[in-house]
Length: 470
Image (cartoon, rainbow, N blue to C red):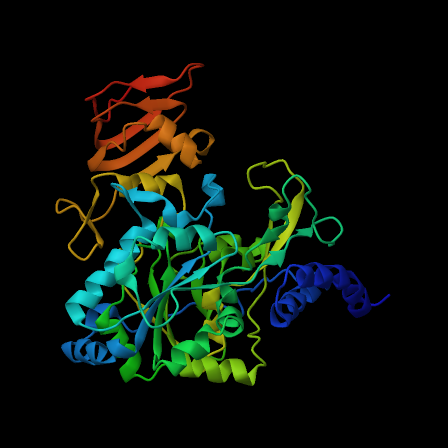
């Protein structure tokens, strides 16, 4: 049996499952496109010959007052689009990540809404907020938004991205998990945004309402707020696509980076797309200087034209993720999740560009280390609801909590039951072992706690931890 017919026969079971779930023909076609690649042995790898280093880029710090003015003129034709499909499963969450409290009692979603309302008030423009939800975040997100009647707008607040069946690694057949059938499905990665804008009707709705530009970012990156200067540059240069990138640091070695094809086209390469034998080269931050913040700017008419030219299916590089079928049971059977990255569209738009931006436009929460920093006094919310470093700091301290005891939200809440310690005077904070922190604990300088005893270690209330920590 040849690969093509084998793939078609195997896919029939997936097609039936997706049809039964009510998914669109386009969603099924999109999944089959990547499933065929998987069966053919595709890994999604992009080698260093296809992703060379990028030497220089336009710089945010060189934007002019003229570009700010141009951006302010374009605001009335602009929307803010947040990717809100994440569940935070790596942190043990079972609900939308955006509903996690991150500063006082405010969730990611609360802060995003306040950022939008502040921009509307200070600029006088209609500025819609649009959320791309997944099937697992949609209902809870809508319920949380009911309290914000003042957020009313002429276009829908949300649309729902597609969902993909998980695939057994051993057989490449549809994964079945009777104990919890919802675990048989996964979001298709944020690269699904382009197909979902079409299948949901959202792209046509936005264009019909006169919107031309979209600023897109992750809901868990509170530093990603619409900036008129970048919008002005984007509009003046008549770009179809713009990616915000920042300088890679040693902490970013394992993350994706910006590359350049031999023909000069910029591309994005994620860590899962690096051939194993090139890992050391991939992690060279002097060679690959920029990483994708996943803050993107889209020219909506250009996107519509590109989609129409490709039958609404953008051929983004495959990302093959191998995971346990039940993320809460790390020893459960392994599945493939087929995903694509939104930023990979950089390679498909002729004339697409990237811009180097300050690090404060990238404040993500990927692990509990990041969350503890936002909980702490290292960050304060300003009048625009932007997290800003405390006035005494130029950068956040390095926080490293041992995964065994702190990787899950429940672990973090148990061991920091009285909130985050003061970290504003910390240079670094490393904790290994089962350590519980009391009220009003302060960390000063470089603090490393390495507890290996059989019983938990309790840090008393009002303790000041220094380099001579217990």
